[in-house]
Length: 59
Image (cartoon, rainbow, N blue to C red; front, side):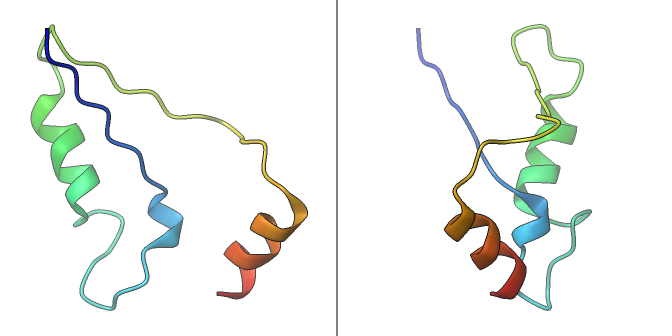
């Protein structure tokens, strides 16, 4: 039983060559969509430290 977990935040793409729609994470989610052995979860919010929140805003 192999399991693969892919994590990512599309808001943190930092290259001018990718967008939320062209990222590898989006590509993988689209390709596995509908396959009965896969799942996709989008979290509405996360628990982050003040430092992590600040860094995601300014970096």
